[in-house]
Amino acid sequence: MLRRTPIAMAVFTLTALVMAIAPVQAQTMPTFTAVYAPGNPIVIGFSGLLDPDIDPQTDQDVVYALEIALAQMPTVSVGGVDFSLELLPQEDACSEQGGRDSARLFIQNPAVVGVIGSTCSSACRTLSIVFDQANYTSISPSCTASSLAVDFQSFNRVIINDDAQGVEGAIFVMDYLGLAEIAVIHDGTNYGLALADIFGASVAELGGDLVYEGDIERFQTDFTKTVAELEGSQPELVYFAGLASEAANLLKAIRAAGLSEMIFMVSDGVMDREFIEQSEGLAEGVYGSQPAAPDTDALDLFNAMFVRGHGRPSNTIYHPYAVDALNIFREAIEAVGELDADGNLVIDRLALRAYISNYGQDRQIDGLSGRLLCNGDGECALGGIAFYQVIDGAFVALDASVTIDLGY
Image 1 (cartoon, rainbow, N blue to C red):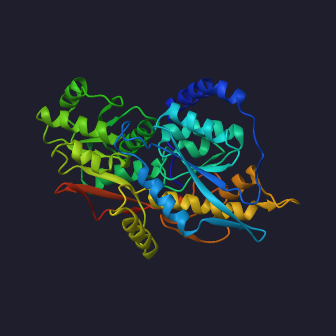
Image 2: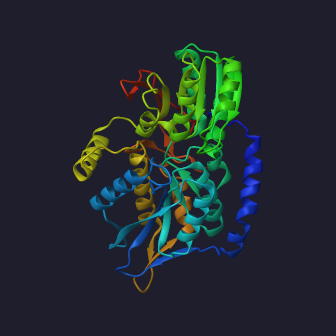
Image 3: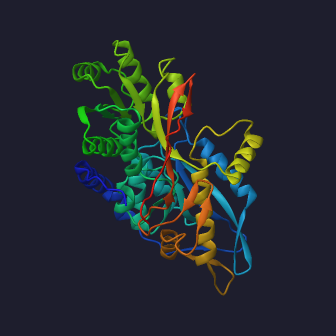
């Protein structure tokens, strides 16, 4: 089992969030069953960032992938009766407030059996606070902040957590690249802060020298202070944990200051075409890491269906994880759902949560994103981390992928 790095700020953050959401909890009555009359659809929610005006790096392709998967298998069967599945996407703006608002909308709709998402750790945290109280269940395709699975009973994920990315990223920097003087910067989000903490602690444990640790704010554009501090500390490599826009702007500021020798490395939240485009030609040579789904015939077939449906490949790596989350919900509904005397489908929400929490314990399950095995504590992924470098304007995979053994 990978070491979980304690994050002192997490206690303060969680306390603040609980206080902030207390009025919502006071109005939230837990529901123990979801009931569907014959002919009524079972609704599965999706919570993510869908508005390009908020951030060009949206989750729209995740929604497209879920729609493709539902078109292939649009129903579940309980007691010999078919019930249709329906997707309900909600905007959460990849933010704490957005996650809270999205969760509230879902629990106000009794037809929602569970939610795929959120896709950002900040939104996942506030959504999970509400869902823990309401007996709802979520499965995230991309929330990687390590503490989420420990902190919440409602939260599950089908992607490997930041313990793996942080630890293996440090090993990559020190062993593969041979660098030891490291700067670590995050964007202030729960995701960025946690990953930066794990990466930095791992560098220190491996004998590296953390010459600089800092943070910026989301949507920040003036990096004068940060660049001056980097110039004074002279790291060999700057590791940035956060999202694409901030990474691109920080990189441009570093290069504009003449710090051309500082190597730049980014986390999975940056691994997007948006980062390369916004970097305006300065991303060449940048390293990155992200979870990696295995190359299988099943994934190739699904990706081909995506191209046929939308005329291009998916712009995100997270679509196979979302499809796996959908399939887990599908199987869980069929396993715990029962028909009452009137032919209504009755789903015990806590039984659904328990089934998902132990998914794959009785047999090996290979999803689109890799092997799935839930450990009873929200962690359902047995996957790998891959490393990349921007070459000729695109992230190119390096021969340095790592398969992670999480010990369960």
